[in-house]
Length: 326
Figure 1 (spheres, rainbow, N blue to C red):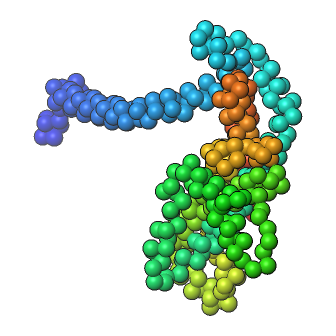
Figure 2 (tube, rainbow, N blue to C red):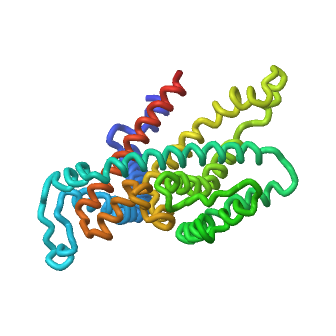
């Protein structure tokens, strides 16, 4: 009999049993560590989930349910909100004001997004160049963000006042100008004026996000493009725009979703008037809910606004993905 065969432990010996026990113990420890890691992940996730459910999920679900109920001031005392099915939607969609509000919403959103994006992009491209006080001037761009919207609306209302406003006083001081435009009281001019003020408010967001996107484009690409004659507009078209497109997508989608529900600046300037010329779905929903106290119909209008936002976001993202694939 050889020495090795003498020293090798037989099957079922205490040495092999000890190895199996040690392996089982290591497996148990690894399993326990995985469970503790998973428990820690869940513990960190739970507060975020609770926050989302309480402050985002519940209001959305509650608003959807209210859109199918006869929810009025009486409901606060009795707790009763009878189920009315699609009656609220039929009432608001057949209203004579809905078509006007829908058209104004489209014009307000389209005009605001176009102005904010074009001016924001122009400012972002301008500040990409290094020049004295560029950092200080970029900081000044954020001023409209620092002022509360209702305060901005009050200041603009004074500036645009027909009789005592600063703008009309400036115009009257100019030679060959003999006009006092009714910026906020003319049915043909009020919506354009409100869009202009909203553009002023949205430029900082667009300029800041687009400027950040421009900073991520390597300077070497412009140097290489310049060797091939791609400078100025050609450099913007073939280098800047393709690389900036993902940022543009984010800016436009967020801008549309935010602009669709703009309420405070319109209420502060015109309250939806004159003669509903600046009435949007958001202001109509507010007035239906908190002026006429028809909370069910107001919730239905709010749900229409949510559907419009989702519809636009899906269409735009699909078109953008198709363009990137091509």
